[in-house]
Image (cartoon, rainbow, N blue to C red; front, side, top):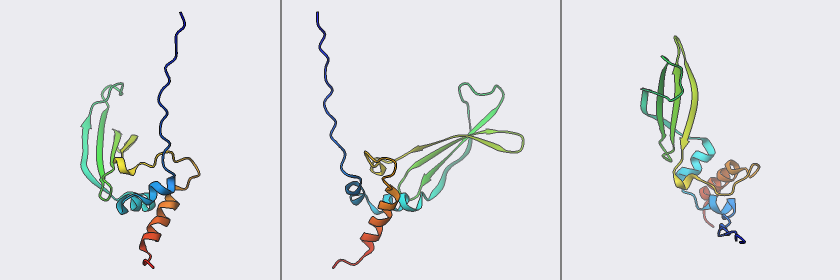
Length: 123
């Protein structure tokens, strides 16, 4: 008996990076250019983590970008006189993503140029 392989439907190729950037709102471009404008949403609060050191204290802190609503979640281990950052996780809004961008695409530079282009008077 011959098994036939099912083919996955071909994914649609993403639009060119420049076109995606051209369609982004100003607040997203500002964050890609100048980085995020963080504000603390939840100050340090205790958490328990699976596989952590027994008896150790762990805390998280949550921040949100005031421009684009990206969320940043930081996990720390508390020591006697310092915090040790263990991880930082980011949750981006859907419109933040640039599909198909590769290393060397200079997304930041292209976002910066798009902001410049928008700031110029229409002729």
